[in-house]
Amino acid sequence: MQLKLAKNKPFLKTKGFSTFHIEIFNQILLDKTNRRISIEFGYTIQSHSVVDHSRRVMYKLLALEGLSRADHYSHLKYPRKYLFWWKNLLDKNRDKLYACAKEPKFYIED
Image 1 (spheres, rainbow, N blue to C red):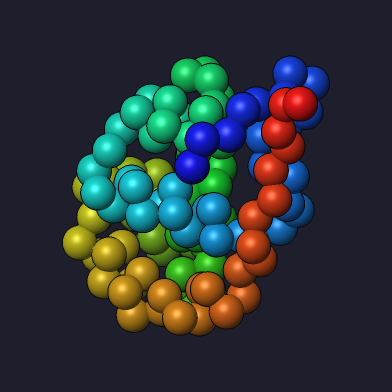
Image 2: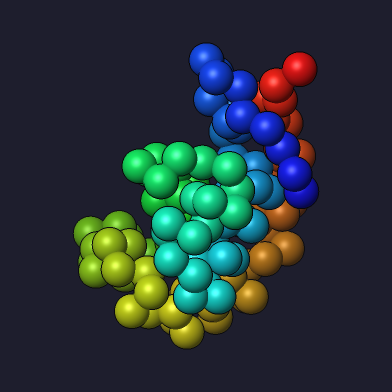
């Protein structure tokens, strides 16, 4: 997926939870660094989008499992320490996540 960034607009046009968020979280589960993911998806190195997008997925997974954020704070803060735990949750709830996720739309430079 080769997309160009608009200079004055955010990268992701879609509001809400999209399949793009799931894809970024999946890259984290492949143990890629935030910096590498940012570069691959066209974000600046200083961008917090990778963290923000992946947290949305983690919050959804916790909600689907009926788990509280407070009890799993360390899992949210350091997802790479708990890769296998998150991978298990993602595999278990993948269909539910994709059912509630929207197709992403992006801003592109003309």
